[in-house]
Image 1 (tube, rainbow, N blue to C red):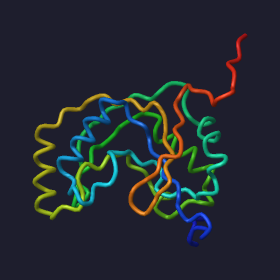
Image 2: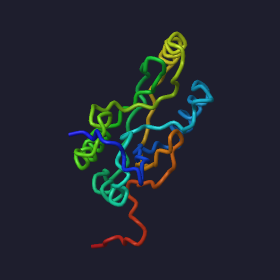
Image 3: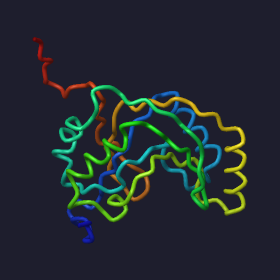
Length: 187
């Protein structure tokens, strides 16, 4: 079942869950986004969205739920190519384990997902959008011609609150980090 009713008016801003990218990859994709995204539409840093709209009332349990499903080590994969978004271009992200992480979160919230989040997942980072179709095709061809795969690491996930355009960072859950006050168990 997917969520069809509107958000609770008392807390209408959904949560966006993104994968955190290693610093070099983030810098590269941010630069591409600044270069090719129409400036008046570019309100966000480059991002790999895992969920577009989780219900805001799960915020109290979401960080712990994420800690339970995150792998023990940061997954490593590849920026493997580019693909068309029609009026935009995305960089394809192949990270073994990312689909499984997303599936685990989707399973926990399966009755609360929007239609968009309940559908399939293809990991990507949008570097251009809202372009005239001919410009988008030309950019795709240019990027594909010179594209070289490169490694990417995902050291955690970030939870944002959607604010009608810009996002507000709520928390990050890093792989291998324990919450404040939690002690390591030795043995």
